Length: 534
Image (cartoon, rainbow, N blue to C red; front, side):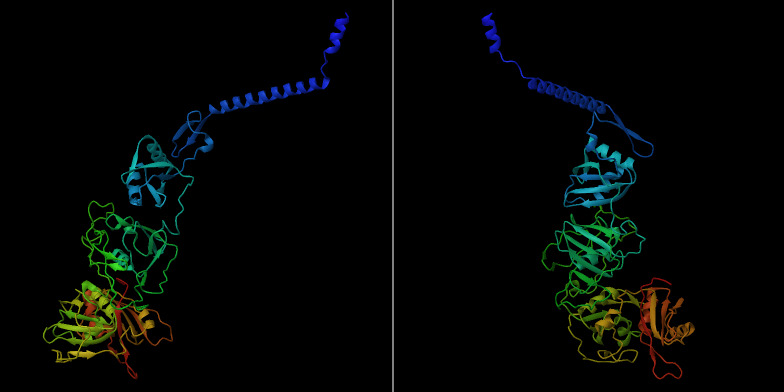
C-alpha cells in the first residue's frame, strides 16, 4: 500500500489548459477538412456544366469544360480572326486569296514586322469556319502554314475614310513593304499616273518607306518583281503640303517650287518590271519602260482596266531618253504653211517659258524651240509628242543643241520670219514663281479654258472668230460667274475632238481682241482644261 501511494504521487496529472487547446485544434482541423471537401465537390460539379454558344444565323456549337480549355482562358468568338506565323513577304492579296473560301472578307490589317495579321469576315460563321479549319488541318498562306484564333476585337479599326471611297478624300497612303530598291517621286509617279492624274507626292520614312497619293487599284502590287509591295489606304489629311520639289516630294502643279540642280535628272522605273540592273544611292541606272503585267503575278487586273503595255512618260526629267540635259527641244512634223514661230509659241508656252524659236532651213518642217530650262522641255515632250496639229503628227524630242543661234534666217511660206525671240514677251507664263504656280500643267484635251476676255464678247462672236481664222468651232460654251466689278470674263469651250481644240489654241491663243472705244486690246488667253467635257 505504501508503495502504491508513492507511485501515485510520482505520476503527474494533465493540466486542464492543455485539454482545451487540443479540443480547439481538433475542431479547426475538422472545419478545414469540411471546406476542402466542399470546394472539391463544387469544382467537380462545374466541370460537368455545358455551355451553348450562338454563332449567328441560328447555328449553335456546344462546348464542354471537362473536354476543353478553362473558360477563364477562352476568347469569345468574333468576326475578326488573328492570323499568326506569316512569312515576311505576305501581303493582303495573299490573305484574301487563301481565306476567301471561308466567307466574304471585309478588311485586312497587316502587321508585317510581327508576321501577323487581322482578318475581318462579314459574319461570325465565316470566322468560325476559318478557325475550325485551322485547328483540324494545315492552312497555307503564300506557301507557309499559318495559325488562327479569334481576336479580342469585334471590328478592325480603320483609318479615317478607309472603307469609304466616296468620302471625297483624294489623298492615299501608300506603304511600301520590303523596299529593296530606292523609291523616289519618279517611281511613284510612273506607277500611279497612268491610273489617275497625280498632283502631289510626299515621301517620308517610318519603318520602311511610305508615300502619299495614288490609286487604290494598285493595292497589293509589286513595284519590282518580288519586292517593293504597295499597301494602299485612304489617308487622314485631305491635302498634301509640298515645300520643295526633290526626290522625296514633288508638286506637279507647281513645277518651279524649288528647282533642282542642272544635270541631275530623274529617270524612271516601272511597275512590275524586273529588278534594275544597276542602281546607286541617289538614282537609277538606264531608262526602263513600263512592262506588261506578268500573267502569273498575284496582282491582276482585267484587260479593260489597263493597256497591254503602259508607257506614260514623266514630266520634269532632265535626262529624257538618255540625252544630256538641254533646254532646247526639236520639233518635227510641222505643217509647212500653217505653222510658224508665233503658233509654236502659242502651243509650247503652256509648259514653260519660250526664249527663241527657229525653223531649220536644211530640214523642212522642223524647228528648234529654246525654253526656260530642261524641265520645260521635258514637260513639252511629255504632253505634246505625237499629237496631231493640222493633220500632221508632231515629233518632239530633246535637241543636242544647248541654245538657239539666230543664223540662216529665211522667210516661211506664210511670209513670216523663220526666227523669233520671245525672251521679253509678256505672254510667257512662267516668268516668276508666283505666276508659274497659277499654271496647271495639263495634257491636250477637247475642252479649252479661256480667260482675259472682255465681258461684252458673246458666244456668237467667239464662233465667228474661229470661222474667220479657219479653225473648227466649239460645240459647247460656258461662262463662269464673275464679280460685277470684274473687267474680264472666263469660261470653257468644248470641241468635237482633242485635235480641234489643239488647232484652235495654236491659232487663237494670245489673239488681240479690240472693243469699240477701248484704249488697249484684250489678250485672249487659252489653255487646256482639267474638265473632260461640259
